[in-house]
Each structure stands twice: as structure tokens, then as C-alpha cells.
Image (cartoon, rainbow, N blue to C red):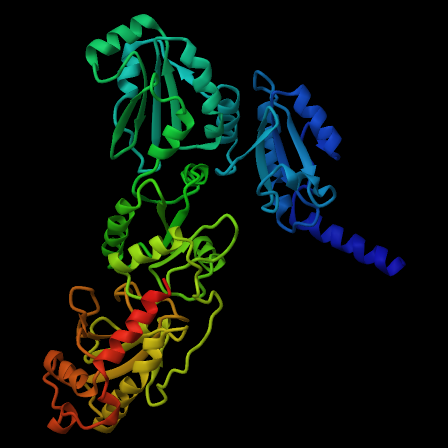
Length: 521
């Protein structure tokens, strides 16, 4: 017993030594029961809730911020209560807070509705969040302010400005009620005009804006609707707030989550030299499904988003990759390694809308890849190859995960490796690279696997990489290397003639494999 007490005391001392304050150190009072929560909701129209846990190793690191927040709130009028809750001791809060498992966290509660705060731990931003809960709309009384506000927003595509014009006061209350769910849209500014003289001046200067109108402004577009014909303001804003295929961020994720349409996420690496090409293909498909599916993309150069990729059932390192963010947690993903083309994406999305079940495994499943005679590379080794290398680099990029074509064509490239081992040429080096288990260098294309690329000597940029487009036949691949080698390759004729059994690929069978992959969509 004494040993246990000693160990517990030691653990507490250790935690205290790592953090300046223990959890639950600051706040107006501590919430301990569900009944107490209901009483507070009845009493306070708006309040803030700081969630933490005594079972969370890092939660105590936020206490100094909460100390500053409490001190600032004490000067704030009207006073907003900051209530604390230990989710480990009283787990009932999970019924109300949708992300109560992500700790620590701050919620704003307005009339019993929970709104998650998603921004940085900065006092002024939390105050702005609270302000939006109390007064979601800022009213303007000068035409100069209105005209200035109507200028195109800056700051990226996640910045949004909304202006409501109320010549008829009947629309005012309905508008304020319908925009309450947008309180935690931190990159959204919502303002309104109800002064009749200002509205009259506005009509003279901007006749496109009606007497009772709603204006939504993004960096790339401005949309206007008449409140007399737009009964569901919330739905109209939700439908128009997001572009065809915007990059998702903590600032606009709430916009995406408010839309009831299925959400498709593309995971891509913005640092890859071919990223913009993949995004263009993705947007072409997105335009065809506008109103049915929301398209967004995440940059996996952020480790947090790479983990999100795995969570959606995409187990490899291959990007670009696609997965639906399904509310029922069922995985429906685009087969990794299948050509990232407009046609394949269209078929994939339509299959989802038609209720087709995904047969693509979400667990890493290695295929029988035959590359015993080849030397493989990992990311660090490939990036370490100097850009002024004095040899041509030929790489077979494949996927060891559930890729029929990688399994089928690996013996052919294995023969290529055998032949270059026999030739022993110093100016041509041949390697393999598994895209399923290794992050792909930014200078290589990633839209389809398997593929063969030749990186010429003295260069490692996308403008000089040569991709093999022909059939997977030994003699044709050897001829490709001979023709495009920077240093004239002295490859004997015997290696460019049809002589090996590995090259006898039936074209019909080749098409069948591609068709089988498409059927998985």
C-alpha cells in the first residue's frame, strides 16, 4: 500500500515538474454532473467550456493559456463564464461535445448548442469566437463602410465575407437565427445593413444588390441572392461558400462539415512538381458532380493530414489518393496506384453515388512482387543522389500493395535488372522503388503505377525526367533506355530483340487487368 502511495506521489510530482500548473487550475467553476450542465444552460445564454482530462499527459500544458484567458474574460463586458470539465472523471460530456475525445479543447455553448473552437490558442481569437456567439452579425450605418466591405476579400480561398441587406425588418430575425451555426467559421465575416437611407444610397451605387439581398464574397467569385426568394439562408450559404475543389484547412473545415452532401477528399503533396496537374484533373471531375458531392483536398506534407489519409482506409504512401469522408465510417476509396485520370475519378464517384460497395482492401496487403535481381531504393537514398550525378538513372516505380499490374510486370523489370547486371555499365544504373511503403520524391510523377522513368545524368528536375509510355516488354524497355540515354548507351543488339519469355505479354490480357481495376471502382 505504501509502495502504491509512493509511486502515485512520484507520478504527481513528475507531472507537476513538467507543467507549471495541474489540469483544472483555472476557470470560474468546475462542471461535475450532467444536471449541473443543464442548469447552467438555462441560466447562461452563452458560455465557454474548457475540456481537459486528468488522464491526458499533455493537457496541463494549456493551463497557462487558460489563466490568461480567465484574466481577460474578467475585463470583458458582458461577462462570459469560462467553465471547466474533467472528461476523464465525468464522461457524460461526450453526448454533447462531438469531439470530446480530442483534448484539451474549448467549446462555446449558446442556448444549449455546442460549437467547437478550432483556432489557435490565442486569447483574442477566443474572444472573437465568443463575440460571434453573442452577436453573430455586425451592423453598418455608413455607406463608406459598406462599399469598403464589398471589396473582394484577400487571404486565400478560405476567406469569406457575407453582407445582408434588410429594407424589410421581417427578414432580420430569420437571418440572425439561420446563421448561428456559422459562429465557428473563423475565416468568415458577417455584416448587415438595415438603415433605409444607407440602403437607398447602396442601390444607387450598386443596382445589382436588391433592397432585401444576401451577398456572398469569395476571393474568386461574388454571388447575390434575393431574400424574398431564398427562404433557407443557411442552405444557400452552405452551398455557395466552398469552391469547386478547395484546399481544406482548420479555417474552412467547418464549412465543409456543415454541408450534407458526401465529401470526397484528395490527398496530395503540394510540394510535388506535378501537384497542379493532378489538381486540374480533380477539378474537372468535381465540376461534373457539383451539388451532389463536395470535393476538397488536403496537403499530406502536413503529418496530421497524412494520418487522416490512413484513417480513411488508404494504407500506402501513394498520392494523389482519394477517399470519401463517410459519416458511417465505412471506407470507400479510390484504388491506390490506379491511373489518376478524369475518367477513373468519374467512375469512382458515380459508383459511390450508385451505392456500390468498395472491394478495395484498406489494410496493407503485399503482392507477390518478383524483383530479386534488382536493387531497391528508399526515399532518403533516392534524394541523396546528387543532381549532377554522372550516370543515367532508370527506376521501376511500383506498388507492393494490392497492385495486379505491379505483380504482373515485376518479372519483366527483373529481367532488365539481370541484363544490366550482366552489361555492367557505369553510366546507367537501374533501381526499383516501392511507392506503397516509401514517400515519393517531389520530382517524380505519381499518377499511375507501375511506371518506368529515366532521370538523365546531370539533372533531377521534372522537365528532364523521361517517362516510358510503351508496352511492358523487355526489348522495348531496353530500346527506350538505349534511345534516351544521355550518354550514348552501347547496348548489344541481342538485348533489344525479342528473345525472352518474360516479354510475351498478351495485349488483351493487359487490357483485362486494367478493366478489372476499373471494375473495383
